[in-house]
Length: 254
Length: 94
Image (cartoon, rainbow over all chains, first blue to last red; front, side, top):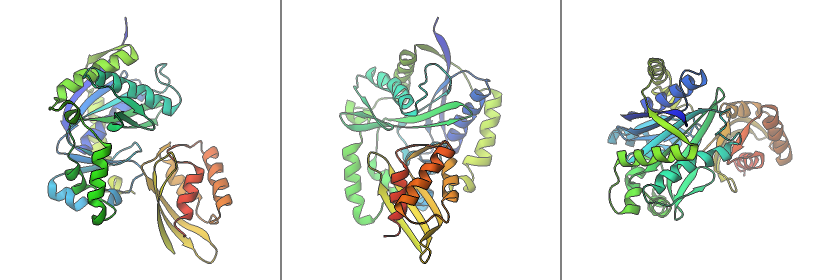
């Protein structure tokens, strides 16, 4: 019988809640309280997440976010700023010592991205891993990913773009200068794609989640069993949301 | 004096560095390293910023100091390295 991991489908949450839930799962898994976990989720309202090392005010137009009702949050993972609107976000939490996870960080990115590549294949889309942390379709990015390792546990989260509105994205992300904005928008349009763009029609969140579930099951030869956050995880998530991800101290720390 | 640089690390990520430096002694007073790179453990970046204070703004010294700190504190960078960080710092002074 194949190993069973937990599947969480937590629906749509705010930026701070989403990052708090991922961190809560990381802590619970590191304490042996929950099995390896794959989570699928979305963002409501739309939000920007920035990498741990990024400067919030350098990357994000905080006033525009307030005007348009876009939330922002600093992740515990590195990487770049991401505008989360029409996408499926996943996270995987698993002990560093798990035999399925390469010790080498880049190799582990590749391994986890393979699950997404298999998932995209089930949506009739052929994609490849583009180091360091992207998945591309015909050279265009469809997925960005970021990993941290804490308490001997791996957390990787990332996006699968369902659709992308580059102009809207640059109303809330800072650009070096207004003069360069049009060029930047055109560059990003050249470099980024989405399921809607490739398939020529909307692909539903649930359909993508189903395909990605299969992708993870095949890549890791496991069964994903639908579960729920434990009460400990719920409590931890609330604590992390209140004490960290919704605070100015955390989000503006760099 | 204060300087800022934006530097795309070859084969790596975008590094943004803000530097306060002593013009007379040509040393780092304070340093802020930001960007879309990865570092494990993440908290190591704050340690690096602190440990590099008072370091001379000299290419060889910076590469050696950063390399030593990376080894001492078992820091793993992805999309950034000692040479890239040195370049980011020195470009604040140009």
